[in-house]
Length: 212
Image 1 (tube, rainbow, N blue to C red):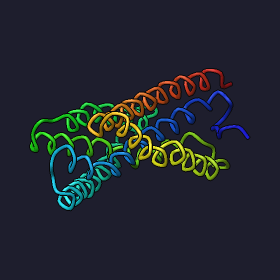
Image 2 (image 1 turned 180 degrees about the horizontal axis):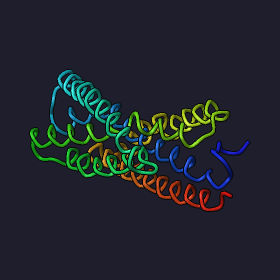
Image 3 (image 1 turned 30 degrees about the vertical axis):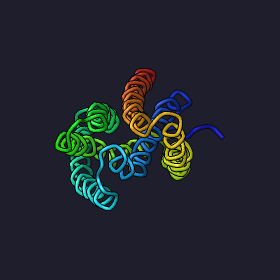
């Protein structure tokens, strides 16, 4: 069975790129959620209970604000941009990468807190738009399959292997070095989503040009 498409095989590429980007995003978010309490304890000297609560608070607050803002911005972008959901997700995620890197390499608690809040806000912006993009890239008859396939892929390539991989890197080097794979995965996700938006826009333009 081929990857779900909207009109023809020419539109497979945006879907594939979107799902692969989503897998990289889930890899980063899953790895961050699993390892941050241990990172704060081992590297920053924060007691485990305090580290777990403080990071959990950041996730809850930024998740609520970022998801709500992302939904509104996604609808706004879709009105004025072709592949607006993908462009918004890609750009916001690319912007999150340097903040995530800064948070994980910061020298002071204030720097860490500020940069992590900004990184998480930008990451959560894509929550609604990227799922809307997957739906828009498929025909109504294929959407259930497309969504199921995307969910399977993002977990099997994303948050399932990421804790173990970061753990293996930590054993080989250190946790301080291992967590640096997270912003790299964020950068990859943003790049793939921007590529999907670009390819999808070109495919849509070609389809319109060839229409009778």
